[in-house]
Image 1 (cartoon, rainbow, N blue to C red):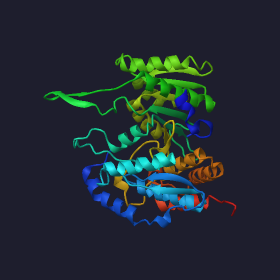
Image 2: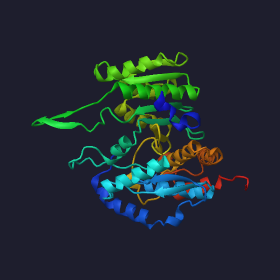
Image 3: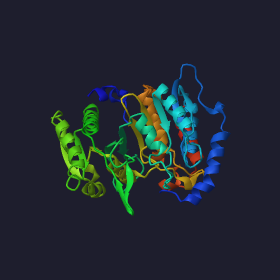
Image 4: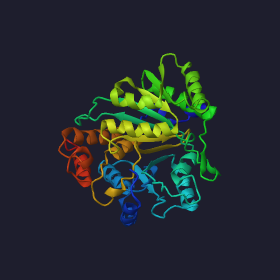
Length: 385
């Protein structure tokens, strides 16, 4: 429980892989766009909260621009310290990684875009994104999937939380060719980390007044690895008698989410399953552009989109949906105890969507990213305050 005790959010906060040609043609514009922004655009307020900003790849810089514009209009007392780390834009190195880590360790809070991982193997199995999360021990990824009032989907009034262990499992970067044409990829499951993420999930459910935790696994096939994860969840569940506990096999969970997602409350699962379920569940309420996410360690909090997509095809076209990033930024403000600013921004975003006049293409509209930002700013002070 000690690991959970240090997480500040517990007491106050919730929260297509592009083709190479697209990346080559769009990377340049993303780099130019990022470098063209002067430091004067950053929020500079005396006594402000320092926050590390990592725009990432694809439309990440455009989404961060949306955050900065809205924060400026809302007079949010946050000072962004911007860094750039990208494998596809040739902006990744050990030196840059250490600079980012130093900033994040000092500030304790960060907001980041998707750091795209190329599929080509260039001698290093662990991506910079994975290395960043491991070095900060960001073991818990939390994605709150909630329907947005005014935006109708196949399933409405959804409200579920996906909690994913993201420092081990299939993403352990332990692969090798044991014989010619035979690749072994190791999945690592440990009792310590399985217990930790299970406790995190149950503690989350307790603090947020949620009644059920579902452990998602494949222990019927991976009897030792997922069997250990499931056993740890069952042991932790005994410590929380007021929280209902269920288990579900991952493939059945995918089907159940599509057929009847209302049966779920909090779901906890290993790394790869969580990655898949995050995306599936995001699709239930509108897609990658509307679902916020966050990652926690005992010391640090990182805010990001719930479904991590760079959307490289949209770079420079002014069509990206900033909803997810703005809601994530709102959750970040709540984490910083800036409740008023958090609520003001979240309410403005939700009002824009509820009114329905300004919607980006992914939500069936024709509005640009700029249109959406302006509309959100217009809803920050609806009574001229």
